[in-house]
Amino acid sequence: MVNFNGTLLETDAHFLNNSNRGLRYGDSLFEAIRVVNGRIYFLEEHYLRLMSSMRILRMEIPMEFTMEFLASEILKTLSANAQNKPYRVRFTVFRNDGGLYLPKTNRVSYCVEVQELEHPFYTISDAPYEVELFKDFYVNKDMLSNLKSNNRLLNVVGSVFAKENDFQNCLLINGDKMIVEALNGNLFLVTGKTIKTPPLNDGCLNGVLRKKIIEISTKSTVYEVREESISPFELQKADEMFITNTISGIIPVYKYRKKIYKNTTSKDLVGKLNAVARLTV
Image (cartoon, rainbow, N blue to C red):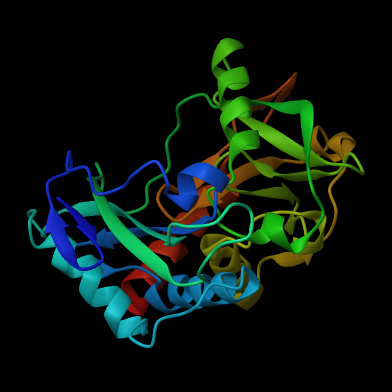
């Protein structure tokens, strides 16, 4: 089932048309949210990011768009499914139909979709995971790149490139040739006990799990966390590399070119992440 503006519809229902601004112009935002046994992980962080992003895009935020409303619409959609399972929930907001580049209205509609996940907890895979740089196009160093918008052409083309060349993922770079993020999440490098991740002003997504990993690592007495630009030359000097997103959690990178990485820090952090996730839902 899909939830469109509060009404549950069959997943194959035709509730969007060719005038949809998300389709025409990518005039849309979304949150990918992990829900386990009816409990919404990091709800407050997702809600605050969505509200901030809507303000940046000058969308009109409906009065009913509270955090409680977001939770209730997610749970309403899950009510048509077995709630005692893990799910990926996509909450999409798009400006209503009308206009060309200039919209006729700033009012919005929303839809909620769910997809069952395999594991109820964040897990670490030991399967080989190889990445490469994607250098055909660059990430812009601006605030729009920080948003979880539907403008993901760079990620789509990069994903095709990765599949064509038998990579599990690619790393995106900005106009300064600095590493920004992976195709599907934020990037972290580990050298010794120092964890580095690109700063937001380099153009990376303002990821919910990025924020959580920074918080967890900062509170730890073991690690030093730095938000600093990462050059491609640093990739082969690091001990570990991992990718984060709210659905998969922590994805250790096994190989970049001739460099083989460990996953010791990833395994340590995923335990801490699961503990925090259970406490904050």
